[in-house]
Image 1 (tube, rainbow, N blue to C red):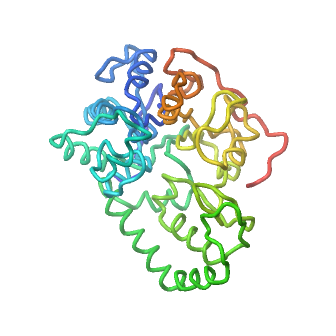
Image 2: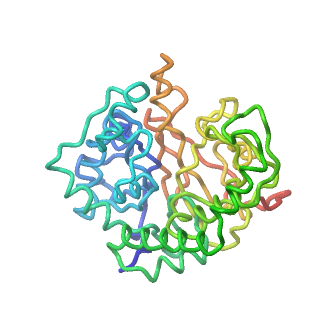
Image 3: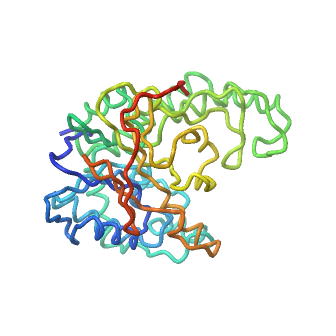
Length: 362
């Protein structure tokens, strides 16, 4: 077994990013017809696209429920970037339920949130580390963020259970390449040539090639990072996002995906209502601006993002809004290609494998 493993045969229900929203998960599983152990009266199987945790109010319960299904073999799943962070002890925004170092910083946005009992941590981490980064069968592929043939081929060569160690090794290779290319020194030279802080939105910098190369080196050298966080490329028109000017942009890799098997991903914070503002990320329009909320996308219209931004419910709560109005947890029923949401509504997806009238690569 490797980090790319087989999907089970038969009918599947592929659940999007959960992000600690245990109530939404429980409701969705009930609407799909599963019991608490992951059994379905029609023999359907659950598949999870990763990002089980962070930001939501009860990541421990989500991981407890999903973890028990994974261990019993009643469900299958892939690692998301948030699980990678846990395995690597890399504390990020919204992970105060697990990392002591994030508790205080996360209180203003995410509290109240349940914390993981210490006794449950070793088993949870062992379960996550056994997960692959991709699942496949003849008609369907599942990965958290991106299916790229070369990175998938590299993951196939890595043994099951090696996710953390392999990820760390590739990060080391990226760091070595940065040294060889003198990226840090060249960045300091660029910083001296530009008098303003790159965190100051008021002053748009020129394109800074070493800064761009640094971001690309961090994003694209590690194949496991590409599969779990997506594809980035040089952007010669700097843009302000996440508190700083950036010189690489996330691209819609699916516009270059030309293979026949369908691919289902999460990760990208899709929105269900076309009139809603993006739930997360300033580059949303570059990825889904021309894609209807229920449409398949990509060069062959055979890729589908099943993440409908349930991870943004913390923000809805903070604003005093109904958290379920705009942010949804969804599952794709396969082969029916029908979405089921945590409120019980269902919607057929459209234009699967229909020829695109006009497509251009990102």
